[in-house]
Image 1 (tube, rainbow, N blue to C red):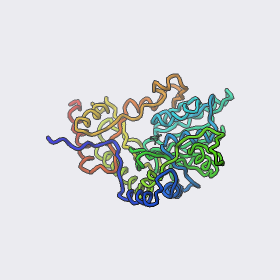
Image 2 (image 1 turned 120 degrees about the horizontal axis):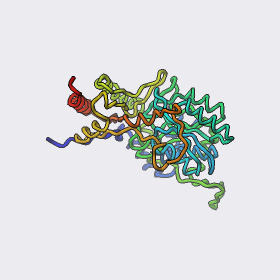
Image 3 (image 1 turned 60 degrees about the horizontal axis):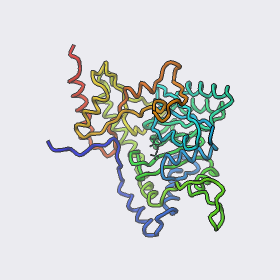
Image 4 (image 1 turned 30 degrees about the vertical axis):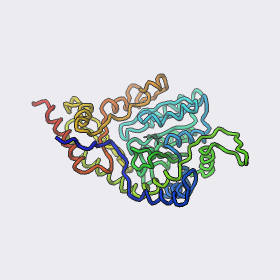
Length: 387
Ligand SMILES: *Cc1c(COP(=O)(O)O)cnc(C)c1O
């Protein structure tokens, strides 16, 4: 059998317009660091999500780091963070020498549990040590229960950073994901729904804070001819070439959302009735971009585990992955505080134990999706106990 082309979990999908903006930058010799593409990309992002502005940077991680700086998080402070997420959500807390407090998921969105957050903030309030910020993640494109989380945070005056790295283009009550907190962040890493090859954005309605973000991300240079610095800065600003890719990618974002949602729908229609298979829910009033199709597989009912599926797909050169390993289970965060959904029950532990992400790239062909579906159906049929 001929070796098939590898199918990735989520790979870059260019629109064809990227070269035009890159060429513009070359023609004007605006290669870096500033230029028209950066300004226009910032405007485009703000316009797309209905916010006052954006500050584009080299990665989503950098955007989170800047948000923490802008909220004055420093050594000895604590910061709330979703546990079921990619490590980049929490690493910037450590960069600032602050302490993460991890919060479990709830079952309806797989995102931060409002009741666990409430317990965490009550405890912190009683100790007179409220966290400086809360990083709320929208996993795999699905918005968290933002209204409930916001009302808990508001009660304790804890500012919100919405980690919308995976949920660009998603909606909550008709409003764009990433626009609900004091700051929102997006990622344009290679595996995200749109990509600039690598990059990120900080969004906010606070124009002054965004101006400060641009200052901090260009080495915090004071207004002087002689390179004077009175604050710690970073080299985080997005280059004009990279921003050119972003402009073209943003033009096709809504199409990419529909393509990813289409992949989810096909997987769910074909596999959703298999015993023990449960697809990630979509909360009423929200629209997920379905960045990755995620589901849980109960091996007692299915006769196979999510790892069996990953192995079977890998044999055919198709990439699938377990869901993120929760941060409270990561060696690097051993001993950090963790608040499960119920005092005796952790939802994210269970999602990790059974959770699977299927290849979901918007550039996958229907044949490739069908082949994923067929492999899984076959596997379940083989392993079903005959009764
Ligand atoms: C990808 C991702 C990030 C980090 O974005 P980078 O651009 O890769 O630095 C942060 N949070 C979440 C939830 C992500 O998935």
